[in-house]
Amino acid sequence: MDDTLLYPRATDSNGYWMKVAPGDWTSGFFPGCLWYGYELTGDTAFRNAAERWTAGLAGQQVNVHTHDVGFIMFDSYGNGYRIHPNAEYKNILLRSAQSLATRFNPKVGCIRSWDNRKWQFPVIIDNMMNLELLFWASKNGGGQDLYDIAFSHALKTMEHHFRSDGSTYHVVDYDSATGRVLSRETHQGYADESVWARGQAWAIYGFTMSYRETRDPQFLQTAEKAAAYFIGHLPTDGIPYWDFLVPNIERQPRDVSAAAIAASALIELSTYTKNSENKGAYESATKKILSSLCQPPYLAEGTTSSGILNHAVGNYPAHSEIDVSLIYADYYFLESLRRYQRMTLQ
Image 1: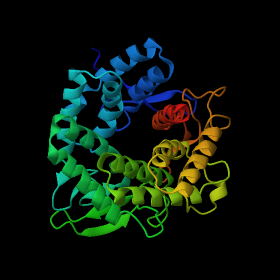
Image 2: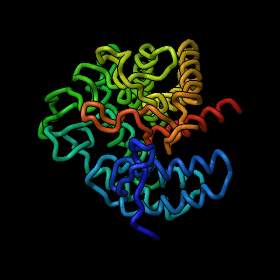
Image 3: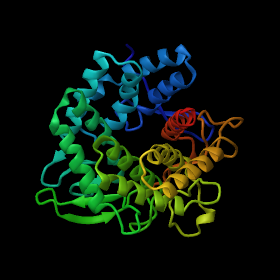
């Protein structure tokens, strides 16, 4: 196996993919796109490519230096195992979950997000997405402790990342010795008290998934609060600006990654809600978002981009990956198409 594979992350000014090493947080999304391509089309060429690019990530199962081992491994090996269960993929996923669990601090009740940053024990809203690996592992031979870690992290995030209106903070910093909240800030949003669009989408998705895995009603309520804020602040075409509260918003770039993540989450959330009005709102928003993503200017077909979607924003405050194609926008777009297809066929 070629272990020097580099993985698409974002397009450059000419529309070509800029590539990253297997340890980058985005590396699992390209294999995941290939698995979804196989699932949507049945074309074995997608499966063969998915297997090759997934195998290139095998070394990440022992990566204890990032909370994003969940993204890296579950979007690649997780989709592969879901489509074609096998012992090799299962064992790799279980080992990956153990690696992720090493970042849990019982005093804080959360998995540490970043190392070597300005915060003592930072937890970002994105980290909700990595819990799916732990929930899966706990049900597939990994042990109750993995479930307990994931549940604790979701509970603490619910308690400390949300404002009363259902919007979310990006970063909560904790005292690692006592678990006390030190600050609530942003890293990729406009300001500490603004609402970063992709972070809000992560919240909808993460708590919808947590409800699926636990059936705890407080997680469903939290997902619905996050969804209400997101939907209530969308422009008419359903594609959010990169931050919901940035000044001069109509002059700001859109973020299709936030739109695609939210669309996928809302499809699932619509199957769990007990409120028929909410169900209608989720289905309507999903249709609006997907309709916009499937046509110009957001669909990249006919442009110079190598991606599927145009007009994504990675990290605006850092002047990084602004108005480009992003591999994770493409991944969640494909996932939302698969989920929507299955929903309409039922």
